[in-house]
Image (tube, rainbow, N blue to C red; front, top):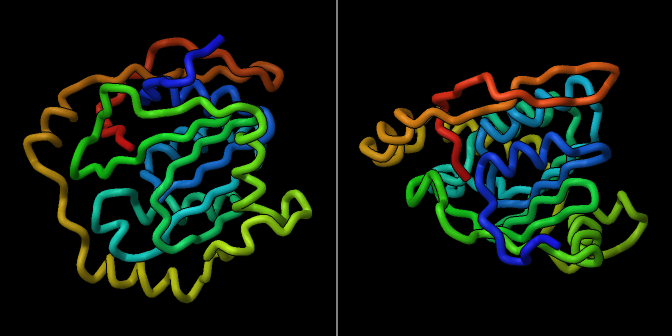
Length: 209
């Protein structure tokens, strides 16, 4: 039996995405592009459902919680995208496994080292997606929360402001030290729709929450 309190490392997140057979649910202030890059690798062959809810306010991206490009990439993958202003919690669900996890700004830390996630029971893992995506379950849960479909014009205005005045980069020293670390990634082999992973691809990209 898995421990309730866990360290949800980048490697574990990649493995979790790789295990998806039906859907991936991500609820957090914003999403970094490397998350979507990994999801896209599995999504090309295994067309899983992608449900995403984020805070579409300009300040979230300026505070180091995610990348604008990640949202546009998710749109190109036909993900169901919701917005929820002042969203502070973090939830990551893959099929029947769900985690509540502490979302940290890249400006504060790009590579959490200690316990940062709670493994949810089956009931909570279903309850949270139902609250944020009630239309998927034909329920009215979430009606008391500021959850809406992504507002196209409002989102375009946010991205326009960010393009005109880009967010400041995180601390340079942290960025350099992180880029100097090699992360093992999965080299994907698709055989009859099944996934197998082999260590082989070394990535110097900055993987962060």
